[in-house]
Length: 283
Image 1: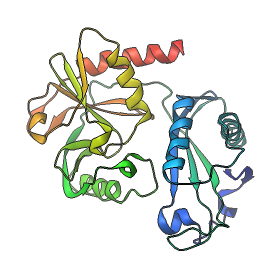
Image 2: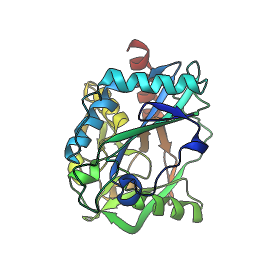
Image 3: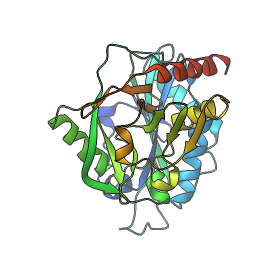
């Protein structure tokens, strides 16, 4: 069952229209959520990011789009799919509805849909035996700007990069901006560890304003034993790093084990993950 504007229907009966602006122009935003036993991880951060993104996109936010209303709709969808007492991956999609070419008509109204699927692992873990190899994706570059940090339906670069990774036997790729600095991975934010110095690209470089990125920054910023900064990362720095890891809400922290001929450890990533899991338990 999927939820379209509050109505639960079979996906086969959804009849998604090709006239929807999300389909026609990518005029849509989405949040990917991890839910365990009915609890949405970092729901408040997801909600406020979505609201901020809708304002940037000049969407008219419906009056009923409160945090409580959308949470209730997500719960309703999970219950309809018998996933309320297990682990699920949820996609909350918001679009501008129907009407207009590039310019929306005044009749275009914001709508939403919610799709859920079972997910196997309720915990954030790191597998020491997991090999995770990456390389740079240099066919296309991301232009820095306010729109580049949005989780929108315009993900052509990520799609092309994923195809490239698959064709070259890679687990992921790192994306560069037009200034040729690294901004993120195809499916998450990037952190670099060198000694007691840790950094991640700043939002101004064009990376996604990730919800898990925010959690990790909060953890790192409170540790007086390390030096953390948001600063540009050049490809040259990758070879000198002790560790690289990717963050997203579904997987938590994913250590990179290999970039070209460079092999990395995961000691700092594992320690940070332990702090993240403690934060979740306390929250």
